[in-house]
Image (tube, rainbow, N blue to C red; front, side, top):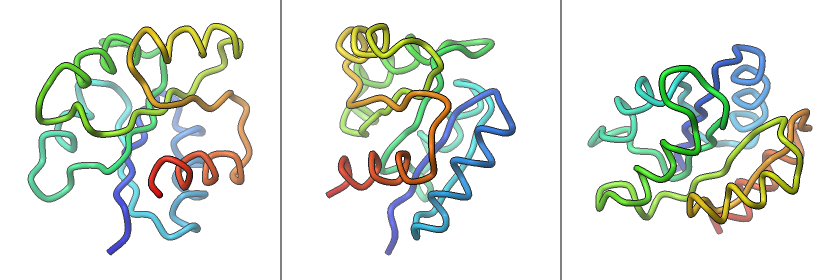
Amino acid sequence: MSSKILIVDDSELVLAMASDALKAAGYDVFTATNGIEANSYIYSTTNKPDLIILDIMMPLLDGNKKAKILKQQNHSQDIPIVFISSKSEAELVSLVQEAGADGYICKPFTPQSIVSCVKKLLK
């Protein structure tokens, strides 16, 4: 059974590129355009993700706040979270530590970089 990946980003292009790369690598991929929409997967009994890729700058609920909420709840605290953002690497390192996330991917990304990040966290 392949791992389930949830990608949360308000950019349709990012969702498509990341989704295509991860599907090609054999993962089941679900997408959401904001942190609220993501809840239908995160709290699902059948589609709960094994890893979440989360954009930081989004409408409704930014990724940094969403990650902090997820890491405080019993249901989701063990799900690895990877930030994806066009922020600088230094800012991302700081945000990862602050939110308790597990890694980051800088935009623009390559299909190989997103797949290798996911593989590393799901070994």
